[in-house]
Image (cartoon, rainbow, N blue to C red; front, side, top):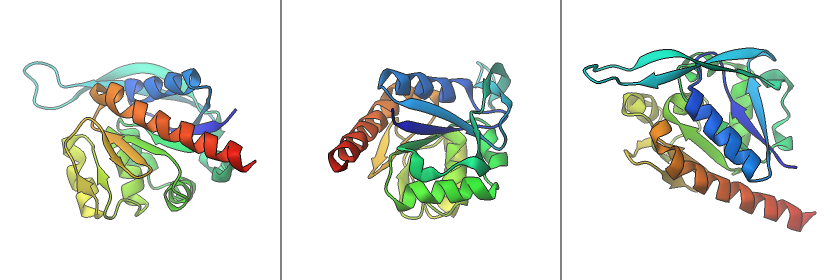
Length: 191
């Protein structure tokens, strides 16, 4: 069964993480949760409540990382997903995560990103000239690193599929799963 990485840390957004996790299982793939360390992480939920102008955050479920970034050989994985929430702001500086991120971009493997997830490939210098959706408050992070902000529910730029927030899960995860299925078929044909 092909393995696909889901990148998390404390304050990863619950729906950004769990929806693709279960969709991968439905597609016959093994989601592998990866974090800075092999431990349990506290996810959060985000929403702009009526009358608020900023995002309100509260605790969501916890999730256990199957593997630490330092233990990952990215060649063993079919694709990668950068979950949103506040975690990317903190984990993007991890040298092993940067190494892993560059692998997927350099080898044209299927990549998904949502919301603040963009902060990881942006920091890893992988978004130059790439069209991506992200939450509008991360538009600056994308553009200052050379990316092109697109305010749509699903943006496909080659091997890169992105959405703005968990509200877009039903739009961008399906096209990413399709890329993973094509990559799986190509790998089987080569074997």
